[in-house]
Amino acid sequence: MVDWDDVVLVEAGAAEPLQCPVCLDDPMTAPQVTLCGHAFCFPCVARHAVTNRKEGEPAKCPMCFQPFRLADLRGVRRRPIAPVVVRAEDEDEKKNESKTKTKTRNPSLVRMSLVSRRRESAVPIAAATTRAIAAAKGARKAAHPGETDERAAAAPSARTSFWPRSDFAADGGACDAFAKYTLTSEERALGEEEMSVLEAKVHAMAAEGGADAEQELPYVLLACDAMQTRMTAWAERRARKLGVDAPPPGVSGP
Image (cartoon, rainbow, N blue to C red):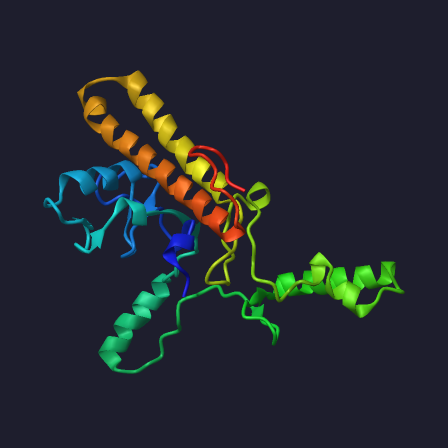
């Protein structure tokens, strides 16, 4: 199991865009997910956390009423997936099946991906990626005919058994589609990305003005504070792992 304190971002596969059940906005503002798996705009869930709870008790999820804390929220992204397409002829066959009691209906079309997994690895890899790695190995062997097997195995193109890692500059912090989790050392960059969305919201509301903006602004600022606290906790946690001093709040960690 993965310690939730080590989780930086959650990626959810969905055919439709994520929508906040509180404000119904799409796209959501810095979407966050609770431990119970429900997603909300950060300002919306922050407002709920401070305005809909009994004194001395934690707030409860607006959807399932499970207790939650702002410190337990994590950013969530949608990984677009193709919906299952139900063809018109399938519906007709389904109606005929119910009348005749015979099972002649063809299934709907579903697109699947071929994956493979090496014996020493716990991570399946798309077949196209496996073929690309094999081609890279072949090209490297042709370019370095005298290279030892140990040195070739240490090459980046040969590291098929290593757990997937995200490179924010290359993929924006994307998660591997076939692994339960993806490693990253760039939690600061992911946090700053969420913070920039909240700060843009603050500036837009300040420029807009009006009663609605005045009522909502405190909760956007609360979300900013919660995000900064989360980033500080990440930096302190990494510093403890590395055995170094924790950086000052607001300063990038080691």
